[in-house]
Each structure stands twice: as structure tokens, then as C-alpha cells.
Length: 81
Image (cartoon, rainbow, N blue to C red; front, side, top):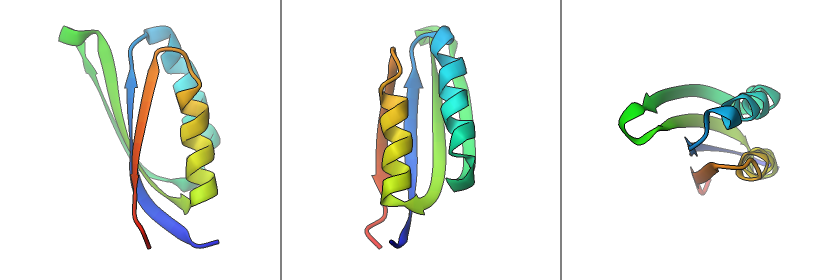
């Protein structure tokens, strides 16, 4: 299966969920090219953007696990080739 490049946006609405998010990102570190996260204190959320390079199955597995965490929203944009 061919690899794809993409960006995954993550919004964490509960600080307790951040540890689980970091655990999933560590689990998939082999497909992560870069990561930037910022707390947005005025809205009491943290926003993380992750650049990925992996197969569709790997990226979908990561976003699926992240999306199953309570108070976490995940969206991704993946290249077509």
C-alpha cells in the first residue's frame, strides 16, 4: 500500500484527555513527521496539528483512536497520491 502525506487537526477540550492523546501520538510516532500544539486559554482548549506520512490504514487507525477519546475532536486532510 502506498504512503500518503497529510495533516491531522486535534482539539482537546479537557486537560485530562491530553495524556491519552499524547499516548496515542507516541504509539504512532513512526508516521509523524512534525507536531505543533498550542493551548488556547481563552477558550479552555488545546489545539494540535500533526503532519503525517503513512499508509491510509496507519493514518486512519491513529485518527480513529484519537477520535474515540472523550472530549477530543479530530479532522484530517490526506493527499490523494
